[in-house]
Image 1 (cartoon, rainbow, N blue to C red):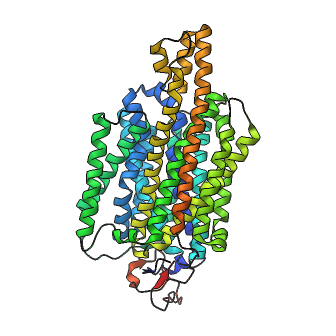
Image 2 (cartoon, helix red, strand yellow):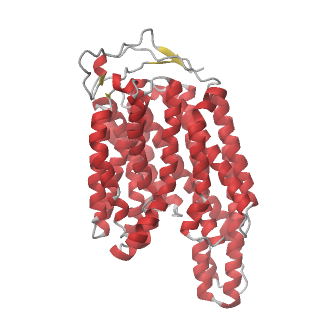
Image 3 (cartoon, rainbow, N blue to C red):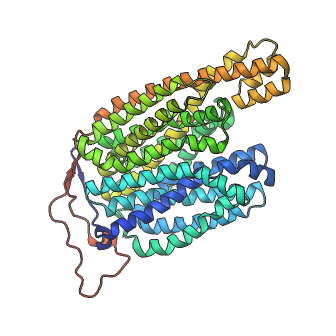
Amino acid sequence: MSGTTTAAVRPSREATGANRWVVLVVLCVSLLLVALDATVLHVAVPAVTEDLRPSAVELLWIVDIYPLVCASLLILFGTLGDRVGRRRVLLLGYALFGVASAVAALAHNGETLIMARALLGVGGAMIMPATLSILRQVFPDRRERALAIGIWSAVAAVGAAVGPLLGGFLLEHFWWGSVFLVNIPLMLVSLPIGRMLLPESRGERDGPWDVVGALMAAGGLFGVVLGVKRLGGGEDMTGPLTLVPLLVGVALIVLFVRRQSDRAHPLVDLSMFRRPAFSTSVGCIVLAMLALVGLELIAAQYLQLVLGLTPLQTGLRLLPLTVAAMAAGLAGARVLRGIGPRRMVCAGFVLTAVAVLTLTAMGGHDNTPLLLTGFVLLGFGLETTLFGAYESMLSEAPADRAGGAAAIGETSYQLGAGIGIALLGSVMNAAYAPALDSVPGVPASASSAAGRSLGEAYDVAARLGGPAGAALRHAARDSFVHGLHVTLLVSAGLLLLGALMALRLPKAMNCAPEGAGVPEAAVESPVPLAKGELPAPRAAGKPTVSA
């Protein structure tokens, strides 16, 4: 037990009545849009390239600017929502997301599309922490909140998986801009419904909002995420465009932490990290994403380049992973109540490691039962891990700091994903490239080019032709499978390390009701009470001690 005292913000009557489940639907739609937009463009890249003719650098920024900006601004907008109102920030995010989607759909050049994608990242950074922090407020009972988080996380899994499939469907019938236009009608519906149904809430307003600290956090995260993304793309770590952002980003984050420690009213309450349950949950989120996101990208390459599946067939082959993740999210609340956070997160890590080790049996030929088993275990184990970690992190944070806590969780997710791509990508390259240096009949320059990626090796082999080309293709394919096995073993080791880390989580789930103690003005009801209707009674008792 951590022994932390949680000061609860009293939700409005609408938030604590039957309408809280309607609020959850609105929040899940918000999250679905953001999750869709993170992946829907991937299948449209060839069409965008053919139409807009962007340079290689512009194309890279078109793809990367959205997650880069979104990850950088999560803490800024999460803490701003705690100050000025979470619903207010969420609705502004809706509006910005809709406008940016229209600009992106009608873009006539690469620069306009990059700007629009950056604005989408700003809107996403407003929406993501707001959904989780509002959820924290409208479900004060931990048992109900666990169920709500399970549904919320299942929707996130659906959005990430459906994005490429939706993008492929739209591209078959419309032009590439349609992948952005689909956001507009949903935002036009979400804005008035959100204004009517979502409760307003905020944390304490003691002291001024630390604008300088917010900008330092945004700049530091931008630099770190940019550097990590470049490393994941195979760039030289000593290159100025990689090393400088990393060093500047780390320096700004260090200064930000020192600044927050010295302020009477910090932007981010760093004392939360002194609570074992909170810091361990954040670490588990980072480690889970670090171990698996890079692996997911490599698995997609395996399905397409080794097994020869089409992008649509690849998406369908990965669909069981998503279905299993949805099932784990929906069952998560019951499992958490039954076995507690510690055993749940540990079991999730171990199950995911078992799935990863099972997939080491993959070879150069399709083995559908093996892949189905591995992907189902992978989806269920990963979602179990993330659900338990997110629920423990959010429940451990004080209610008046819910926006900042949600932003920390989402930032750790993004950082773990970026570091995972860089780390596992480096492991993959180190295991893949050496075997191509001594292929009979292949010149050294061709071997060097083929060692960059399997796709490039296939292109080089096609240009060479004859026995040398066939030998290079066969060697590259076998080397890729070998590199995949090595990467899977490293990923399994990281997951088992996560299982050990999770032993610091609370053993049992504390479902004691949260106490009052925050003025009623801290939460505003968006809908007036009916004539003769009494306000919801304030919960009695002292602040509760959460697990």
